Figure (cartoon, rainbow, N blue to C red):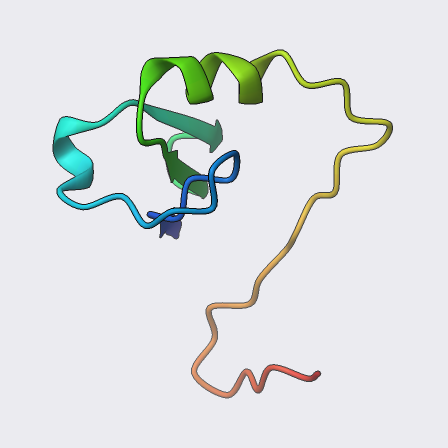
Length: 69
C-alpha cells in the first residue's frame, strides 16, 4: 500500500495539485509513502536532513485489522 501525504514536511503547508509538485518516494515499489513538497528547495532540504534514526512503520492490510492508539 502506498500512503500519500500532501503536507510539505518543511513548510507544513498543504500542497495543491500534488501531481505538478516535487515528490519523494520512500519504500519499495508496492509499499511506502509518497511525500509531496511545495518546491524543489524544500525537497532538497528534506533529502539532506540528518536524522538520528529512521522509523519504519508496518501496517496490516487484513480485513479484520483494527488500529490501536
